Amino acid sequence: MNKLAISAIVVAFLSLTGAAVTLYWVSNNDPIDQSETQAAAAQKDAFLELVGSLKTDEQQFLTEMQEIVESSSFPWSVSDAKLVLDATGKFPSREKLFAIDHVTAFTMSLPNQTEDPFHFVSAEDKRLIQLHVGGTWNRTRVLEVRNALAKIAPTFKVLASPPDWEVESRGGPRPQLAYLEWLESAHKEVSAGVRLTKLEQCSIPAFSTLDAQLLRHMAAVWNCPAAKKAFPPELFGNLYEGNRLVALPPSLKTYEALISQRVMNERQQLFGGEPSEEAISALNEIYGIRMGQFLETVAGFPHQ
Image (cartoon, rainbow, N blue to C red; front, side):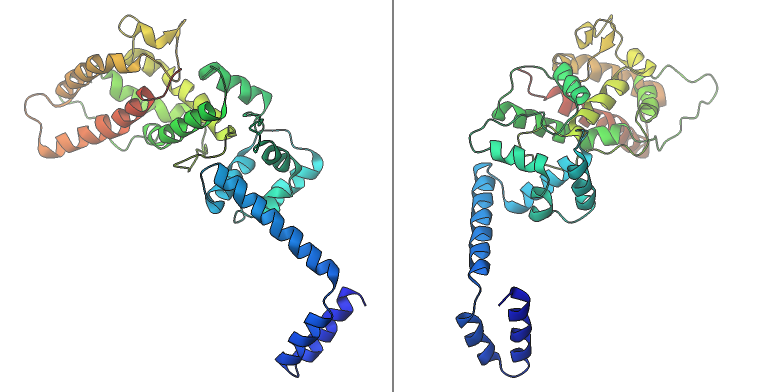
């Protein structure tokens, strides 16, 4: 008797008595169904063991893998590309994600820690990450870098948002306000609708294309003309490599006092004398939150 016939009989008995269905199903259960159930249970156990080894939980792992897959710049095979499209925009599903061969290949390498940290990015994005971060890669270092970038991402999003203020000049030309001009122009260096990670914590030891996108846009914002005025090489030489400011400058923390002093001078130029409480609140929003939090998280990046 095939499965369809059994199912039909069970449905028929269901309309008569639940007890009869239970007895009938137990005595006529297809052994293939049992083996499939056992295999599914074994796969689930193996998956949970894998998730546990990464010190995360099932939903966090699937959410993170979904983001990596949806944003991936890796050149998918034709079959995988269809499965990625099917999974995109959906609630993270173990069945959908693990149907993708490239995902399965990665997870199979995790138990013995032979995973490739660049498994989900293109050759160009791999080159970009290595250019800006570099160093020796192991699981600990990959997660350290990914979590640091995840911490920077929301502060960069604020920094690169269009300005919500206007500066009126009364009785003369507008003064030179290097940092304010940098903040006013930063959004022009970022692609419209750019996607940044929404993760607060990363547990998968593989770079995401979103990691590379963040570095790419940070480099652009650091090197716009206004940034060069805000951080001139004659004052901030150690932030440069050649004639370019680096996206993750290792020496940024050593310039905290200088930046603070220059910001204070700029604030005084904006209002002079004693600014109102409203003005102080606006300045704190612009210089403290929009710029200060970004610089603080970048300065805290764990360089090797």
